[in-house]
Length: 333
Ligand code: AHN
Ligand code: ZN
Image (cartoon, rainbow, N blue to C red):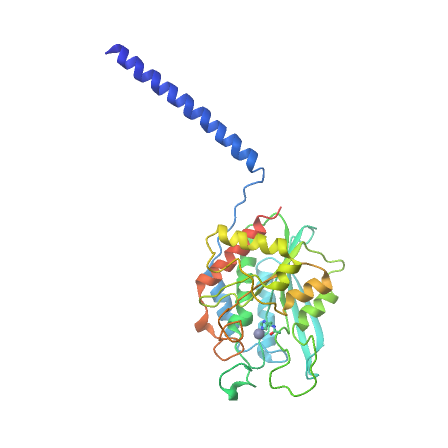
């Protein structure tokens, strides 16, 4: 009886010693493997992002030179201010494809502006004056509401801004809302073809950044990031000029379980704000942009039509993109 008891006690002691030492070993191993600091990444709130999208939509189409555009610009600058950013307004008269002078405004919110380690996040905030891909030709000269195409990226970044105020990441962040992205030459235009009629706001910023000698490690552009069933293929210009960052972002998305939203497959090449951020400011920039491999335009059947309204927005897509962006920027050291 007694020897039995001693035997059990000895075994217990032995297993606990073994458990202890193997525990210790595994901790040492993981510490060796992962010398990086573990970071707390905040939770993205898609309800909040959705509200910021709704607020923009409530102004109506935000076409440059309209009252709705002016009012929405004031709203966006005020929100960034409210979320603790240092806000810059870049006003410029930009010439459109038809020689209209656009009273444009890039809106920039800087976090930790003293840091030289920076990442740039951007989206366009204007909406297109033409629904020139609408199935109904009578709509071609009417503006679009631009909810996915414009407001979605801005809504996600406003929610990122709210999170940045609550908990600062290790690096500095600049959020740029580019103006006059979507005033490019319409399909119905009969005049001479002019290149570079899209992305007028980012072209301006790339040539004249909001602060002298501005630099950032890389940028992330969000374009049409709120659509139901949205998919973000790897856009080709991004892959070519910011391949390392494309990998970083898609790996982060997969780690978080968003592989359906972020297939590791090549999309098309798109002329978007990231092109000018790279070519004029020499900052590699990744375009996270909806790609519809089966559709006619490649962007989705809502694109540049009257269908681009709140009905096509899905919080699951906003969450996948927003949480991925947070994962990436909070892991920068
Ligand atoms: C062109 O259609 C040339 N580029 C697409 C950029 C864009 C327009 N993104 C949203 N609207
Ligand atoms: Zn557009």
